[in-house]
Image 1 (cartoon, rainbow, N blue to C red):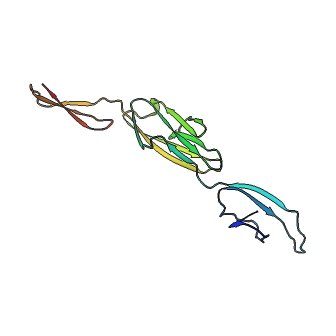
Image 2 (cartoon, one colour; image 1 turned 45 degrees about the horizontal axis):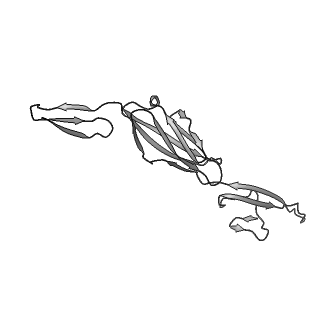
Image 3 (tube, rainbow, N blue to C red; image 1 turned 135 degrees about the vertical axis):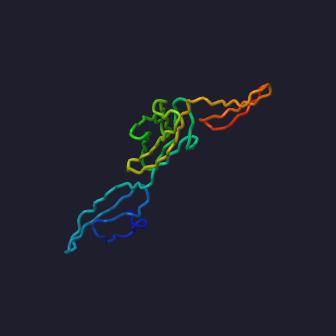
Amino acid sequence: ADGLNGPWTNWKTVNWPLSLTSLEDGSHKLHLVAVDELGNKSEVKTINFTTDVTPPSLTITGEDTVRYTKEGITLEGTVSDTISQATITVKKGAETFTPTVNGTSWTCDIAKESLTENGTTNIQVVATDTAGNTSEKIVNVYRDTKGPDIVLKNLSSESTIEETTSGYNNTNKTFTVK
């Protein structure tokens, strides 16, 4: 039988209710015998149980916390748990998306209509095991549908055109016109 700090080799007297807070994740057996004031013993009762206090493992392919897209986006990754099967929930606020799970791999398509146009949308990915333990990751998706702005300055036969973008990577590009 399992003891509180390792296998018990002898019976121990414990108070009821019994608190088993220091057990590692996994399967355990508890053998119980009740003894009355006169020394009469009950039959041995065995309780089989499993403890699970460790959250599932959750990964998102790329592990980028910010993703850029013009359209919708597909998130993918893996989920696993050492004790039980874990489920995946993908959501944006109250809107929930349905991921496809194959073994420990998952994918989830998020349509462009669910993403803020020319802005950031926070997508929450949560893995939950059967014991209720959770792991969570947030991916910020920036949907950029606006083309870059071109600013023309003092045009002449040897002019420079400066391109300033206002979306994806906010960089300036310079072109020479001849």
